[in-house]
Length: 88
Image (cartoon, one colour):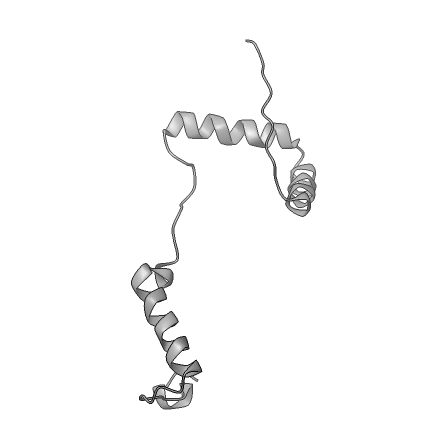
């Protein structure tokens, strides 16, 4: 089977940490990446869960930005501490 190369730009620190991990489990980075590709092709999906943090929806970000704007501009409103909300 013919082989080819892929060039990917990654954070230098992430590359070093990944290389260290691969060495600790007895494989090269190339082997780990090939395992990822084979699992993706076999399963026809990314072989791990992907999820966005639901807190950062567009609506939540608009609310947060509005609250920050109101705080910065002294807009009066109902404010409670974490203690009052029972969070702490």
